[in-house]
Length: 120
Image 1 (cartoon, rainbow, N blue to C red):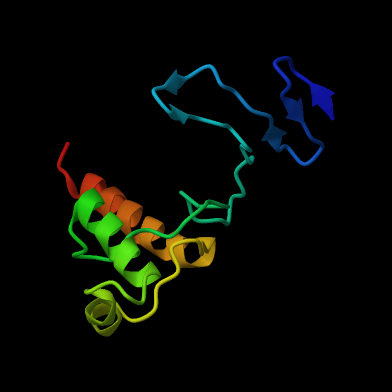
Image 2: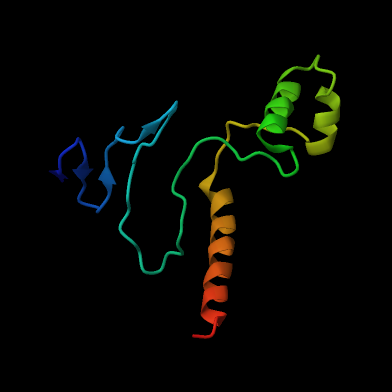
Protein backbone atom coordinates (compact mmCIF):
# COMPACT_ATOMS: atom_id res chain seq x y z
CA UNK A 1 0.00 0.00 0.00
CA UNK A 2 1.42 3.38 -0.92
CA UNK A 3 0.50 7.00 -0.36
CA UNK A 4 0.29 8.91 -3.65
CA UNK A 5 -0.32 12.38 -2.24
CA UNK A 6 -3.46 14.29 -1.40
CA UNK A 7 -4.45 11.66 1.16
CA UNK A 8 -4.98 8.99 -1.52
CA UNK A 9 -3.79 5.44 -0.97
CA UNK A 10 -3.17 2.59 -3.40
CA UNK A 11 -3.91 -0.70 -1.72
CA UNK A 12 -2.35 -4.04 -2.64
CA UNK A 13 -5.63 -5.12 -4.28
CA UNK A 14 -5.35 -2.26 -6.78
CA UNK A 15 -8.03 -0.18 -5.09
CA UNK A 16 -7.38 3.54 -4.86
CA UNK A 17 -9.10 5.30 -2.04
CA UNK A 18 -9.22 8.79 -0.67
CA UNK A 19 -11.22 11.93 -1.11
CA UNK A 20 -11.06 15.15 -3.01
CA UNK A 21 -12.91 18.38 -2.39
CA UNK A 22 -11.26 20.03 -5.39
CA UNK A 23 -14.51 20.25 -7.31
CA UNK A 24 -17.16 21.91 -5.20
CA UNK A 25 -20.07 23.78 -6.76
CA UNK A 26 -22.72 25.35 -4.56
CA UNK A 27 -23.67 22.74 -1.99
CA UNK A 28 -22.51 19.79 -4.10
CA UNK A 29 -19.10 18.17 -3.85
CA UNK A 30 -17.58 15.03 -5.28
CA UNK A 31 -15.71 12.40 -3.32
CA UNK A 32 -13.72 9.64 -4.95
CA UNK A 33 -14.05 6.52 -2.85
CA UNK A 34 -12.45 3.82 -4.99
CA UNK A 35 -11.28 2.93 -8.45
CA UNK A 36 -11.06 -0.80 -9.03
CA UNK A 37 -8.76 -2.43 -11.53
CA UNK A 38 -10.80 -4.20 -14.21
CA UNK A 39 -11.55 -7.89 -14.00
CA UNK A 40 -11.65 -9.46 -17.45
CA UNK A 41 -14.76 -11.57 -16.77
CA UNK A 42 -16.78 -8.79 -15.08
CA UNK A 43 -19.38 -6.81 -17.03
CA UNK A 44 -18.80 -3.07 -17.12
CA UNK A 45 -19.90 -0.56 -16.03
CA UNK A 46 -20.51 -2.04 -12.59
CA UNK A 47 -21.84 -0.17 -9.57
CA UNK A 48 -20.03 -1.13 -6.37
CA UNK A 49 -21.90 1.14 -3.96
CA UNK A 50 -24.09 4.16 -3.56
CA UNK A 51 -26.64 5.91 -1.41
CA UNK A 52 -30.39 6.37 -1.63
CA UNK A 53 -32.82 4.80 -4.00
CA UNK A 54 -33.83 6.35 -7.31
CA UNK A 55 -37.28 7.93 -7.50
CA UNK A 56 -40.07 5.74 -8.84
CA UNK A 57 -41.07 6.15 -12.49
CA UNK A 58 -43.69 8.80 -13.22
CA UNK A 59 -43.31 10.53 -9.86
CA UNK A 60 -43.12 13.97 -11.48
CA UNK A 61 -39.50 15.11 -11.41
CA UNK A 62 -37.71 16.61 -8.43
CA UNK A 63 -40.71 18.55 -7.15
CA UNK A 64 -43.03 15.56 -7.52
CA UNK A 65 -40.54 13.30 -5.74
CA UNK A 66 -40.34 15.71 -2.79
CA UNK A 67 -44.15 15.78 -2.57
CA UNK A 68 -44.29 11.99 -2.88
CA UNK A 69 -41.81 11.51 0.01
CA UNK A 70 -43.65 14.05 2.18
CA UNK A 71 -46.97 12.26 1.59
CA UNK A 72 -45.49 8.84 2.40
CA UNK A 73 -43.78 10.08 5.55
CA UNK A 74 -46.92 11.65 7.02
CA UNK A 75 -49.90 9.34 7.62
CA UNK A 76 -52.05 12.46 8.10
CA UNK A 77 -51.10 13.87 4.67
CA UNK A 78 -54.14 14.09 2.35
CA UNK A 79 -52.31 12.07 -0.35
CA UNK A 80 -50.76 9.45 1.96
CA UNK A 81 -53.24 6.65 1.19
CA UNK A 82 -53.29 7.45 -2.55
CA UNK A 83 -49.48 7.22 -2.77
CA UNK A 84 -49.42 3.93 -0.87
CA UNK A 85 -52.08 2.49 -3.20
CA UNK A 86 -50.27 3.83 -6.28
CA UNK A 87 -46.74 2.52 -5.56
CA UNK A 88 -46.90 0.58 -2.31
CA UNK A 89 -44.35 1.06 0.48
CA UNK A 90 -41.16 2.89 -0.53
CA UNK A 91 -37.97 3.45 1.48
CA UNK A 92 -35.83 6.15 -0.16
CA UNK A 93 -32.83 5.29 2.04
CA UNK A 94 -32.31 1.77 0.69
CA UNK A 95 -29.72 1.15 -2.01
CA UNK A 96 -28.60 -2.06 -3.68
CA UNK A 97 -25.94 -2.37 -6.38
CA UNK A 98 -27.52 -5.75 -7.16
CA UNK A 99 -30.65 -3.88 -8.29
CA UNK A 100 -28.70 -1.14 -10.12
CA UNK A 101 -26.28 -3.27 -12.15
CA UNK A 102 -28.73 -5.05 -14.48
CA UNK A 103 -30.04 -1.67 -15.64
CA UNK A 104 -26.51 -0.34 -16.15
CA UNK A 105 -25.44 -3.37 -18.14
CA UNK A 106 -28.61 -3.30 -20.26
CA UNK A 107 -28.19 0.39 -21.05
CA UNK A 108 -24.53 0.16 -21.98
CA UNK A 109 -24.90 -3.18 -23.79
CA UNK A 110 -27.47 -1.58 -26.11
CA UNK A 111 -25.03 1.29 -26.77
CA UNK A 112 -22.25 -1.17 -27.64
CA UNK A 113 -24.57 -3.07 -29.97
CA UNK A 114 -25.70 0.13 -31.69
CA UNK A 115 -22.09 1.28 -32.11
CA UNK A 116 -21.04 -2.10 -33.50
CA UNK A 117 -23.94 -2.07 -35.98
CA UNK A 118 -22.96 1.32 -37.47
CA UNK A 119 -21.24 0.97 -40.85
CA UNK A 120 -17.77 2.45 -40.99
